[in-house]
Amino acid sequence: MSNIYVPRNGKLRRIRDGVDINFPSSAPVTTIRFPGDPGSGKMYIGANNGSTTGTFAGYPVSWFDDRVYGASSTKAHGTVREYAQTLLIPSDDRTRLDSWTSEGRVPMYSLKTSPWSLTDISNGSANSQIDSNINFVKTLSGNVWMTFFHEPEDNFLANGPAGSTAAEYRTAFRYIINRFKSAGVINVAWISPFFMCPWTFVSASGRDWRNWHPNWNGSSWAYDLIDIDGVDLYNPDVSISATDRNKSWTTAAAEFLNKRASDGAKALPWCIGEFGVSTYYDTLNDNGTTATQIFSDMVNIGAATQNLVGVAAWNSDEFRYDDTNDPTGEKVAGWKAISNHTRVVGVTR
Image (cartoon, rainbow, N blue to C red):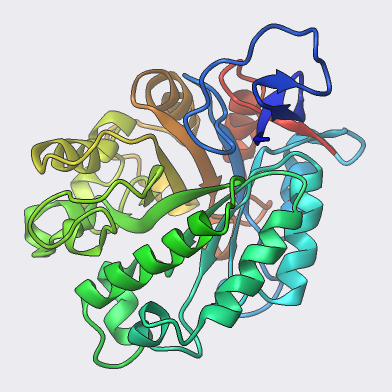
């Protein structure tokens, strides 16, 4: 007996062997590409679940819901970005994941390596913690999109286990995915690492993104384990020259999409784990592109024609959506506009 969870009529519905057990007389379910699929031409939007203290101080996702929809509204965002600092999902994250999935949200969630090395993970030494994660995820009432580590091509060698290589990272990531699959987990979609975009995909970076993708074996696309490709895209991007920082959506996303195509990778659905537009970039205004226009393009270009399935706004540090960092209210107004778009899948809280 197979259960798959999909959004329908504003709620998460359990599809058992192709039948909606909540609405068994409803129309047949369309093809589900992966757990938590928002549907063809549709996407989830949301924000990171920010801490109120620390280097990247921000706000919890409930604050972002209230900011966009109003404190008295029952509407909520369809996704939320959260990060573990360990391989084992900590207890407070388990509580949040349980709450979010019960509301129908589809979180984007990252695991890390600590306290293990990559070879520890791939040789089975960390199985007890991986299996604890598996057993927990199976208890969730909905879906979660998961990945391993964060922007590894940029910070893995500095912040990951000493002496690790990209090949060891790919092997450990594949090991985790396969262990989940062998255990019969069906409510997890796997995201590639969230790559820095556009910097990692331009020649000036000197990077080869393929080396950090689990589907790559070092010479070819030998595996088919990833459901969704992930990037972190701050638009405009500080790695681009000052005169090009306010790029249009199509230009900013093109580095990733074009490089993926030219490298022969599968054209998977993709998502953005950190999306930022700061007040500084808005006022720089090199070519007149505004945050409102960028948000609109995310839906009308990204979701409509580029298979973009999820976007989480970075609601921390200077990218926050509060009065200090959005004094004119342009970012909140633009986000509110897309939150009501027919292509955006939300939930009821």
